[in-house]
Image (cartoon, rainbow, N blue to C red; front, side, top):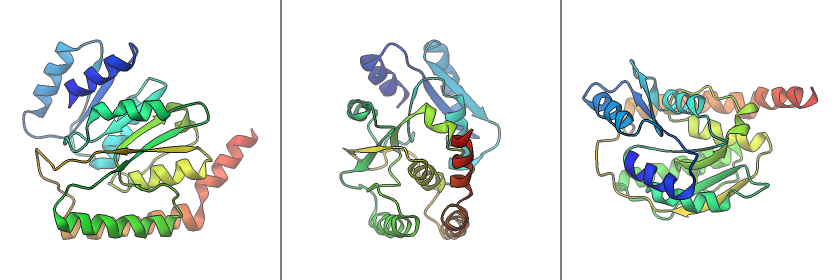
Length: 226
């Protein structure tokens, strides 16, 4: 994934960085990543978390570490093809702030597909989202967006928080179809009852914060008025 990302970025620009978040891995992941940073010192940076911070914590850490004007992120499990970043970049034209991928077809076990569709339509309706695939972790975002958007989630609900806050801040989206592949490495830790239960509670809390209380929109209005 890292080498593919490097090769893709090299074709598109000479000003790029690849940031990898090692979220408390207990195997030899840290050693492999440090070696990659040694081999590609000008373009690869590794952020190590001594303790696991969760998907949201890893994503927030990556956003904070990014220094370029455009931030692209995806997962490290090879279910998306970094080469397709080029398609997102083509849609990042003046007036567009976020280019969001959406899965052409989801290649996962049947239970994950079913749960994924239920989750998608639930959050789309409850949070009033306009994009077609909130849970597609293949996005290109202008770094300037984070001047108005502050993320707090440490769990997988950060994707929902990110899209909702970007939308409510008035940022403009474009969408691009991308391929989704069967998981080649590792095993998802999300689809078990305790995590699903915890995610449900997080969604309710997030709904109260973002839909009922809407403190983030009042903060944006205050900042705009300064």
